[in-house]
Image (cartoon, rainbow, N blue to C red):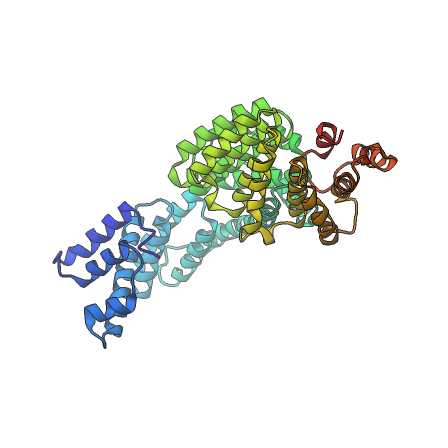
Length: 475
């Protein structure tokens, strides 16, 4: 697997490293490496070919040597990378300390401290300060009081950062697993909000730029989960200059910058500022293109997502569908199962808006065969299956509805405030399937009025049920 994921630069570095001791074409390590590059192989057959029937141990030693040399070649390359260099300098400190060469150990520890501070790597700095304390006994020039003062400030900051990251990770997981179709309430929201407020007053723009970006993100997350998108948009617009102009310290800071731009774009969409969202999406794309290939691939999905959402709300389903087709062609959603959910759900909804009901239902049904469908949030599954029900009903598949609805009532029941609108939709469709003149009955009128007057509590709807009923063939 390691060899399969190596790019051209990795391969070049490995070959350059191993050939330092000779480039004889008969070298078994290079032969094995090239064999693995060509695809999966039968280890037993190759072992017997290279070493005979009793050569399994020698073959595994050869594999281990190839893997070790790959790792060594990558580490040599990483020495000049600004984010990994502090760790390698710290490793040199450990090397010399363990050999009782304390002056050299101190020199490399100072280099590591300078690099780690530039990267705002608080965890490594904690280890570095502990390293200074170990050297106090050996080198009289190191003042323990100064080290302890630095250590105390770093520990305080690190504890704040760790707690912020813990709460932010929990909230991020909730955002991703539900796609915000089922925001709900989690106890960590208020804790994160309080901690972010503390960070804004205590640490924001106090020389720790990466941490400042983390604080901005943490301040936005509770608002997003609670649906306060106006607050998010206004807050990020207030800090837009800092977000765009702050000097990049490390890849993490670049990543946070992109995430904040994504929050802003999506919040403009959610706040119904769709044209502004389209413009902001283009700024997001520019930032992605400037951030490098790794972050571009990781986050370009959100550029597509923002445009799809905006054009869908602007009632331009054909534009949205073109973007989704481009997204599929470029395999943008392949990095995350939840991106696949967005792709297929929105493709289905676009076909529905274009009255292509068969394509819509067929597209949505693809989700059920995926390995990740069972793990989706229950409220999101409720909305997906309700949307499919509407699509199939509109294309005239009444038999499907009569079989499906009782199962859904059993699976997602009993009826409550969070699924009330879905239950009303099911009752309307089931009634129409069983009685051709159901829409003339008082029960239909009662259900239609209830749907009109009931607010959804389970998150966004894939298809606006009220709008669908007003435009449906039922009417």
